[in-house]
Length: 488
Image 1: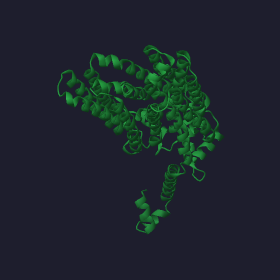
Image 2: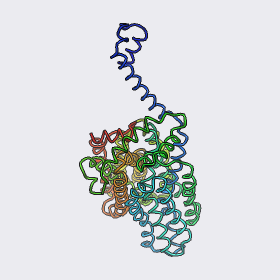
Image 3: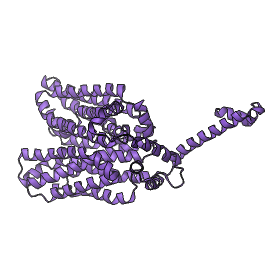
Image 4: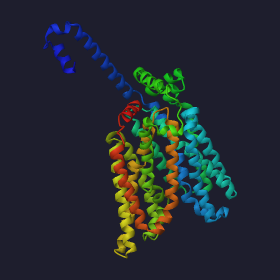
């Protein structure tokens, strides 16, 4: 019976005998129960989110640490090489070790996160980062410098997986996308912080600055709850109820959400333990294809090449110095990442990533045209303008969607029983892609600068097609509803 029919009954417009009949009474009770479930959902969505926000803030301290680590090498190259008498090859090894460490962190991140919990994994990864930063600070030679870089890389490899997973598992469904995007936002802010502050303080002081978000995470983790879904998964039901209560507010009815989570966990626990090869079974393969595909698309558009070597790209395009362009690059990421976070739960994941990929296509294409004109000695006065404009369009578009949406969706699309194994695989592929792009960028640019940018533009077009054909919309759905959608 519809709400309008209820109103007719209450106003006496319907036949009075009908609402004395048993079927009507049963229907009315059913409708009342349904309404109570809706009210319960609304209570969960509109309840106190203070603890959710605090928990997210603590988790993204890890993301900020991630960003400071990634951005550390750019402003410190000359000073470290001079102080420690390093060759270019030795410094290149130092820079690349963060990626190698992150790959190993990615391999183990899922197992660690499933074994000791989301908070435990955050603490372990932060411990590696602190050890790494201290090793860099006290470095007297390349060996201790490299050990420190490897340790920070391992730490951020784990962080890159556990932070989006933790946020996705604690957030109400109506806020999950926006809150998960803060992961990418804090990575971007951390990277920009390292680049800008690194021009003011020396490299040892910058390493000490990297300790600040790590300490904030360690202290903050004492005041926030563990992921309720993980607690339910490992059978700690009393702690699960307490954690969910802390996250939703003491006056909010959590019974419906708790029952939904427990029912889903119970179903999953009847399934066998998942190994790597099991991910390619028919019931999981779509989630794996989506997760891996999004991360491959994210890296294949060339972000780590264009980002790591932005200054050299501007100089190659004809600017006398790439410093101003690189500062603009660092600063423009933040507002557009914020805009992406705002749009995440308004526009939806699919439209946002397709618009973002369209922008990276346009930016890459314009920058490619600039280098083509330079190679042909045509309109040389326009080449630097086009190159800077293209890169600014590219990074703006990437920041608004491509940078954050794949991470958000990675935390949403995998069933909890495969999340550890699948998440490790996806993060490993991401870091491998980052290494491939950053390693090959200079070689490709030497081969053909316009060809390299047109290649990235082509990958952006492929991303649009991939998302349009295979990626489902996850906006406004619980994690359990997303699994039902993917497996249907």
